[in-house]
Image (cartoon, rainbow, N blue to C red; front, side):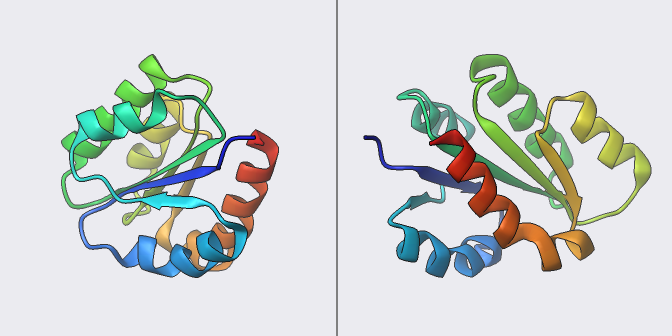
Length: 123
């Protein structure tokens, strides 16, 4: 049995800090890579994996990562959390293949439940 991996790509560590207690309680590996290549390497061994990308600080970099993850690891679940609720950004997230696209407002009430459900489904 493989250990579930929760991979969080963000600029400030707040999202990972909020998910750390859940990851520890469920014995999931929580990783916070800073480089895109590291993210892709973490996804290579296969699932169960959940990739969380927080978009808002460097949109080009964040959306490029989403596209690369989808291209190289279509089996991985990917949640895009957008700091902005601009419809074009949300639509781009869906177009690039995110499993779920949430605004920061939506994430407040649903993120932990969504993460738990996706990792259980991947296992």
